[in-house]
Length: 96
Ligand code: FES
Image (cartoon, rainbow, N blue to C red; front, side, top):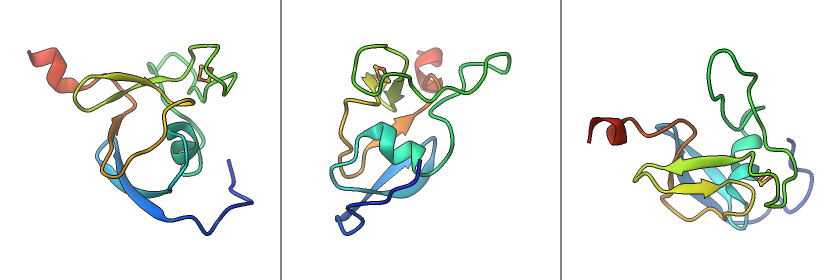
């Protein structure tokens, strides 16, 4: 995904899978991730990487997590400053 418009919005720092990056205010989580890499998440080594399908909250193909374990739909959730996102199931939830 390549941004071609609205490139002068304020930058917001977020963390995705432990990597800090900048996204633009008003981006959805999906736009923030897909503008940095070609896939949203990879469910397993056997499945192809996914990038959502409908981009409008209907197909349920873009669920990812916040580090506190809450599940979010990437295409309908807007980024917030300091947001900590996981594209794989948060490890610490497995230990508890
Ligand atoms: S991409 Fe379809 S619900 Fe998010």
